[in-house]
Image 1: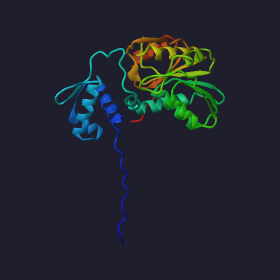
Image 2: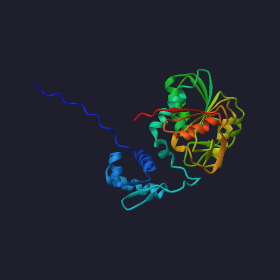
Image 3: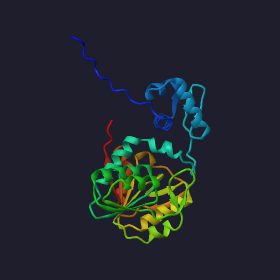
Image 4: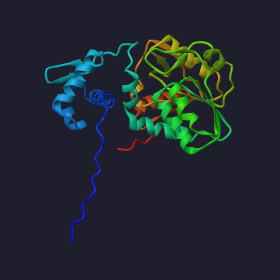
Length: 272
């Protein structure tokens, strides 16, 4: 009798942006990493890691050393990772946060979706739930995801495409968003410190402010790595009654500080 062959599931190779996001996540938790350590953690060759480290160093995202890399010191307030890399950074946490946020959405509501990789996960989860809503977004990726759901009415208010991304900023979208009375706004955040959201770009800060003003309830969706960091432009101080949906690794002192301001915090468990 012929032997039955066991089927083996082979994981597809990671694309460069996903590899580089994992490298940055690894570096953020350790400050200094060796090439061999990264190759083992990510499951690629040492030569691949060297190329990725060289690319990340050239983009100003780490400092290259002979045998590995070192995290940069104080973050520059206008620096942000390439969108392709940001999309893959802490992807498991972002997916869990997005699913938790989507569970807050009720049929018939109007929901504002900010341009953010974490908010993108919330949009995907809303589509999976099949709820009927009216959605407003300044992110063309999110608009495309929502457009696949026949029960979701999608409004893209317009603006100028931000270089290097699929985010619309400026007018007429900013005035349109500010004039709304949406049920809830899902906002991403580049940085949060002392209850204040900040961003790397004046234009991005402006559209976020407008979206927050045009909603009756505000929910900020961001992973715990964004806390304790300050970026170039102030967006807003989290008001009492706002909700922060993050992962459960958020520092306890930060959580208590937000609670003292009247901000509710949901800490979502992240699968291993």
